Image 1 (cartoon, rainbow, N blue to C red):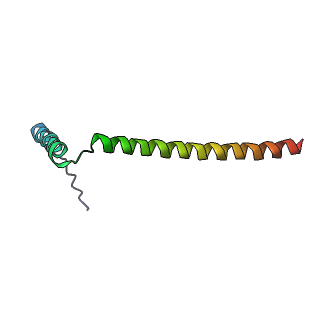
Image 2 (image 1 turned 90 degrees about the vertical axis):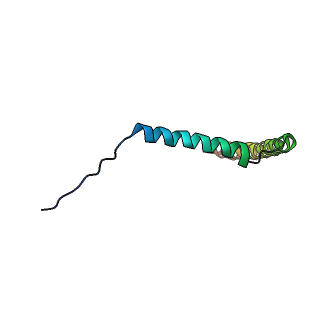
Image 3 (image 1 turned 90 degrees about the horizontal axis):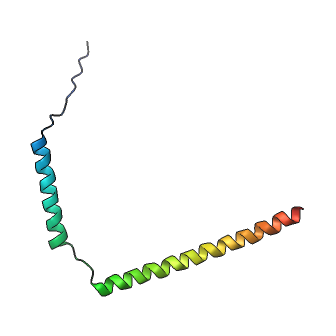
Length: 80
């Protein structure tokens, strides 16, 4: 005969709350003392870089869309 033992975790709200409190404290310390935040000028230059890259990618996708539209339009008009 095979016996199976099922382990049920004990839920203790005080232990969970202490773990959550400790996590919040450690997160606050990390964000205020260990993280190097960018300066305003670095933030602006990064934002401009992202904006320019997004515009270039959007233009490329628009161009490919127009080319595909033109090719398919020519194909379908040649069928009629």
